[in-house]
Amino acid sequence: MRKMLLSFKPNVYKKIYEGVKIFEHRRNFPNEPIMAYMYVSKPVRAITGIVYLSNRHELIDWEREFSYDSQALQRIADYRKSYRYAMEIVEFQETNKISLDDLKRDLPNFVVPQSYIYLDNNTELLKYIDEKIVEQGKNIKHDFSVITSNQICVH
Image (cartoon, rainbow, N blue to C red; front, side, top):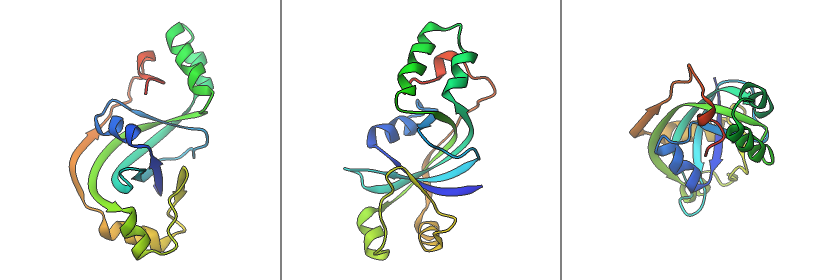
């Protein structure tokens, strides 16, 4: 499973933390399972969790699948203005915080990703995070054996 550092706005992180956001929407995203450290932007400015993502869905496919639900179709159309894909958030794990100040102090070349960066080729950053991160607190797992029209494009 590939690892990445994925950036989130605080309001999006909160919805994942609360378990209400079960899909991560992005314009571009790989079609493979991902383990992502969650960097939360200002005012948090820290890595604060881990998400496991799987099963990329193309929003255009959902238009066909949920064509019977006019409300879902409207939500999909709204989301397609900004996004192409939805990834299932299979699991969320809260962690300790690794602050941006610590990252910049200990890794002078560190730059916060606009969207995401793979860590496979960035061994220094991956090793640093792996050494500093501690799973603690909330753990949420989602079941995607059945996806209903009221679950898609809602957060």
